[in-house]
Image 1 (cartoon, rainbow, N blue to C red):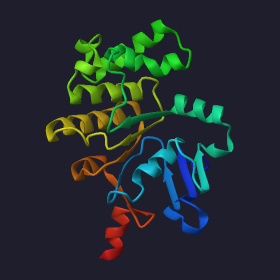
Image 2: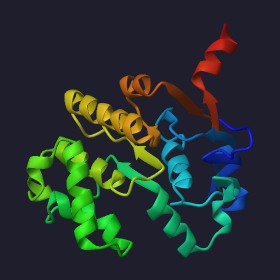
Image 3: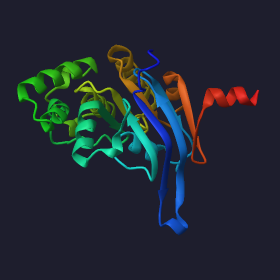
Image 4: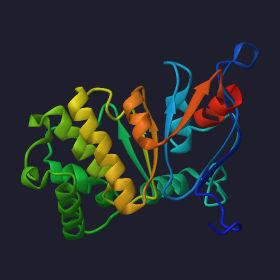
Length: 237
């Protein structure tokens, strides 16, 4: 990579506190992180250490107490709320443990939604949604109501929705947490396939050692600090 090129995502001295100043709990403590295009990382750690908080800040769904999040060199939290919403819609995709789909709508209608919210044409979005649903193995379920699908199928719809606008980054919070091991493995493989075929950067919060292994790079969040697992192992030798 060109040394002059800014990272896709960079955090500098990222801090997040909750509560009043005199009794504040510091969940994230001066986190520095760099991710480039096409990277894929797992964020692991004990429950309650702040993994989801970190993901939400990276996805601009929450603001840090201090520090910066830069996207392609731009400090995202220096932007207005409207500009942040545009950044999320254009460049970020989200997959959650609880998929947040609209159960009364069909698979294709759910996947079309992000583009329609950007005022893209219905015909264009139907074509894009159909193509990505075929990629995730649901070409035969386009018009089925999401509420009548299996958990694995619903999570595939959620992955398709996250990818329909070809985002630079997909942030996934326990995407296999509600699935049985076999279905979870399929969803993990699907995310990796999207990374390889589309060059999508993946940031995945997970308790699954198997999924972390598949992603290749593991970052451990412990006591508010983020440590590269491979580096930690080397330092222990």
